[in-house]
Structures are given as structure tokens and as C-alpha cells.
Length: 100
Image (cartoon, helix red, strand yellow):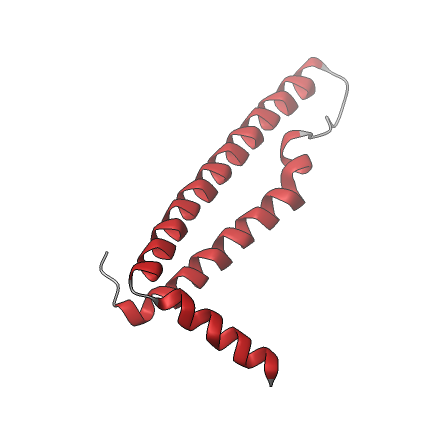
């Protein structure tokens, strides 16, 4: 993917926002995905719930992997921003907004 230097920080923020959404999903849904209560005490219900819990754990693992990939992209964009000297510009803009 090619990104124009003046778009790097905006793109980085979008990736950071997406990462936060996935993190919040994991935090909110973790227990519900892996700890499903069986509807009954019969062996079929217990086996089904165990399988659902395994699937939920797999989904959480996949989501964590996605977070890791997003973080790698964010880190690359941060490095590109430093290379282009955009970090200082971003900090200066943030400081100016605080002063207003």
C-alpha cells in the first residue's frame, strides 16, 4: 500500500481506532465467548457447550492476532511519520489545541 506522507498520521489514527474497537470487543465478550452455560445437565448439552467454548476461544485468539497485526501496521506508520518529521508537527498541533 502506498500512502502519501501528509496522510500517514490520519491513517495511523484510523488503525488505532480500529484496534481499540477490537480490544473493547475482547474485553466485553471474552467471558461470554468461552464460558457458555449449558442449557441442561445432559451429556449432549455439556459437549455442545464445550465445543462452543473452544470456538469462542479460537475467535478470541484470532482477534488477538488481528490486534497484533494492527499494532505492527501502526508501528510501521509511526516509523514512517518519524522519518518524514510528522511526529513533531502532530505534537505541535496537539499542544496548540490544548492552549486554545
